[in-house]
Length: 422
Ligand code: RNT
Ligand code: ZN
Image (cartoon, rainbow, N blue to C red; front, side, top):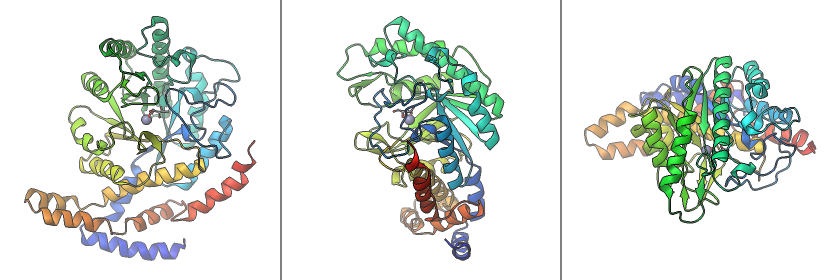
């Protein structure tokens, strides 16, 4: 896109929004300050680097597709992530999983991992001025094969996973300490049952006990923020998931930790956006895993749809930009993986920008006066306002490709880098 054209269009867009009492510059500034936590696992289909060429995600997570050029080494993964960062404006963080450590060709089991295995990542993040978030990996492991980890009835296996998660929290706290920005540690486990279980109560009490043990160790919030992620069902856990929404919401409220809302983990007509204003009255912060659910599947590339818009609007309308940790979570191996990131990040930012460009005062005024025609009319009008132009300008002003320009860059990267990978 031509710089001149973007500037011209932006000038008009700015005036249009100003007529509604909205300052586009301020919206851009707010968006620029809001970090997005990029999930590292779209680079390699949740493979990790515990063993060469790890393929299967496991734990009910299934990645389909075989687009060429998946990252097979940490170097390739970093190269891909740098490419992604070069294509998008705004602040980024990186969310790592425990299987992405640098294990130096040795077998380091999950109950043995230490900060030293992630020091390379910490240095990498420091050089780029970005924060890290962390996730224990309670799947793709022989001890997860029977479908239960932290809620396993077998004490040896349960203890193994408790030790793993404890170590992961320690690593996350070290990341936060070294990088000067708290790391979110997120716990998601696949535990659940394919068929209708009889004794749900015992399973959930075991999970509670494991979590209590895990959280016995306290870390300052300036280093570590703990979060737990619920799910409705997965492949192989269709009938019951131990870590359900009710379970984790109760646990989070009681223990004042965060809950991770992955919008692919709810009933199709349930809206995560609607939950934000409720939860934030009872816990300090939440974590989001933004994704796109399609029928039964939860991990399609994020696009700008109504569900995402409501989430963004509710963050902004609740004045919770500093209380919501926005992360992404999708993995699709059927298309260019760098492109998947770029699309997902752009969608998240577009949704947030759209929400930041809302004339809140005006809308609330109509709402409180019961003027519902006017409220609806403005909400509809906003859909045809030029927020895309404002986003293009934001990209350009940040020195990043604007409009369709990022597509060409990804095509070139595919040709020159991805297709040449073995
Ligand atoms: C799984 C959860 C979880 C994972 C990652 C890989 O359903 O969404 O967040 O996607 O931990
Ligand atoms: Zn998730």
